[in-house]
Image 1 (tube, rainbow, N blue to C red):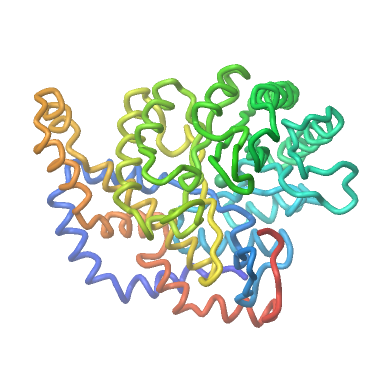
Image 2: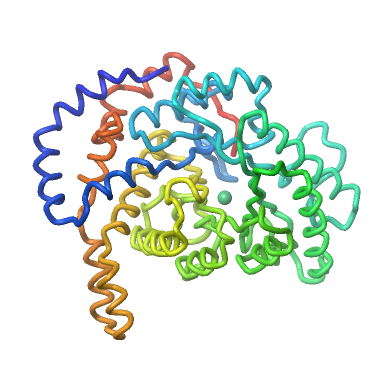
Length: 424
Ligand SMILES: [Mn+2]
């Protein structure tokens, strides 16, 4: 299905008077409001193909109905999200969950929805049907060279699919690790991983990047071979300029200062981008901004500061992607909420009084520095986000528009109640 623009316009019209009042109120208070709106309007977050179905846990999965049954239907769903928020112009595929059998047709369909393909993700954390060798004890770090070779070839195959889709990056997350002390020689595991990644790196086209994701634990509970940003950074440094570190917000131990990691990686030009989600305990993959929106703001504050220091384009110079899985919400509503939360945090970071913050830092005026950050964080920037969406032809209030247009009901009537998307 495709959302007709006049229906979005009609709903916007009903909210117009209230929105104008709220927008004018904040616009009077914000420096360079047009500059802020331009940046917000240009900002897009990729939607992962695996997040369009209802997520499961190891205890069960409860389908919500109308789930996309094919890659074509997943593209349609991202098209719905983008039509409403005008900030989700790309889709990130996970191979082999979503193999583009006919890449030309997929490119055409995506373009019809105003979409393109973002990073492609490989998968060596599960065994696939008819797979020759098992990843039970890891993939790129495996003790057996034949297993490593199989995993390397899979990654190279993923690059080939990505090339057909005009994607420009391979995102690698490994579950490789160990469950018990003594199981693994850490040094050899790291060296095997490096050598495997070097072979994959050699297969990258000139204008491609490889993003190395890290995670401290799960599914392995004693060690993970790429367990933190230091290990990812070390690999990315040894690999070369096309390699960098991908930060997944949920892939940190509790209390980790993620914004500081972001700042240092940016300084070293080794930050690839983000997998956004939120968490309370571990890799919970909850809706972005649902648990700790202040942390999200602090991360965006470092991103804006660090990217500006390097003269980077906020919208295009890093990879922005959601990586979440949700087992009780409508996935489309959850993704709409996540993108809104990201744009709110970004808008708050854009309105930080940077000159005043630098002065406060230089004067060691700790109280004032905190006041400056919290002034921005406590500003209700939602009218700025809404105005940027409106100017791009999107909805003032995407979640409510999605409900009022009865999108899920239409998807259920088209696809059926008992459909199950591929993925987690
Ligand atoms: Mn991730």
